Amino acid sequence: MSYQAEYIWIDGTKPSPLIRSKTKVIPDGKEPGIWGFDGSSTNQATGENSDCVLQPVFVCPDPLRGPDDKLVMCEVLLTDFTPHPTNTRAACVAVAEKYAEHEPWFGIEQEYTFLQDGRPLGWPLNGYPAPQGPYYCGVGGDKMPGREIVERHTVACMKAGLAIEGTNAEVMMGQWEFQIGILPPPLIGDQLWTARWLLFRIAEDFGVFATLEPKPVLGDWNGAGAHTNFSTKEMRAEGGWDAIIAGCEAIGKNVDEHVSNYGVGIADRLTGAHETAHYSQFSYGTSDRGASIRIPWVVAKERKGWLEDRRPNANMDPYVVSRLLVETVCSAMS
Ligand code: ADP
Ligand code: MN
Ligand code: MN
Ligand code: MN
Image 1 (cartoon, rainbow, N blue to C red):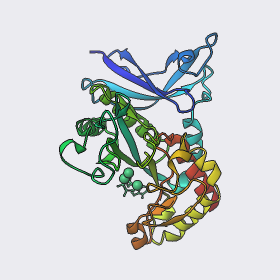
Image 2: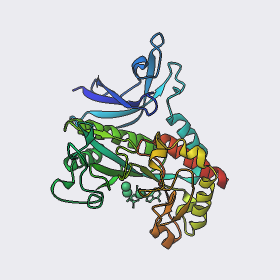
Image 3: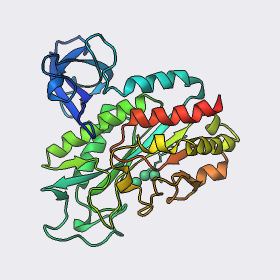
Image 4: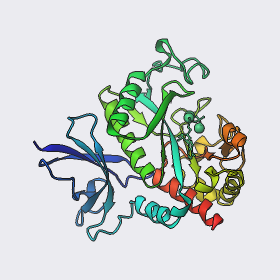
């Protein structure tokens, strides 16, 4: 029998791109090939020259449809098969290839917020829920809205074969996190974008909107980030501590380029409060959740491992963030 392939891509909407997808029915025995779409409806082309090309880059089982159906993560090309200006994956691939000898790995903690009727899921019609405190990794009663969506999403990622590592409820009511990794670029980006698509799609079934908005509620409520855990072969090796510190130092010399590419609205989230460092002030430290970069205690103990860049927003592009970290840290090593 033929099967359904859901082609997924990242559009050109400003200031933050949206995920788009459409379905192609493919004959039995055929692989998902190149396809196209109308770029004039996705902020990727003009009406007179509207055709854009979808090039499959990552294919996995579709956990929401039948056993033979597939998800097809794509990059967008121009009709001459060069990367479209909105394609951030191509540059990520180039940097990953250039620095492949350092074997960069990533684990990304994707935070997000469920919204319904324009406010966070479970929040009262007027005013606010009880202040932050009981929600992070909480359990019980009406404190934990959205858990059934989180459960469905986790199982879906597992069935798709994505490298989902875990989930937790976050500090703000209605906010949650999942982690994806440990993966090299560009696969970390392919899988995170696919997992985001699954989250949005599953939330639809509940009449809920999952948003990557970095600061969905102003005031004394945590924002949503995408802590990016990063290591190289040298950092993971025995005595990798020096390489980790050198990495932090190199990142500290490139603050403006990183912060301006870590997701739209970063100044609203990196205020210096709510477990963040101010975006203009770079710092790193062991176990320090108020630093730009945290070195986990287990890494300090073993003198090897990885670093956690806490600055990327929930709405960051993992192709961009992984490219910047590899470029900055590995070029300082060579
Ligand atoms: P926390 O919430 O305490 O910051 P999490 O458990 O949510 O930590 O996330 C830890 C992340 O660190 C995971 O995504 C994991 O893949 C990542 N990680 C662990 N080891 C490495 C490593 N060697 N290189 C890169 N990332 C790593
Ligand atoms: Mn986490
Ligand atoms: Mn978190
Ligand atoms: Mn973290």
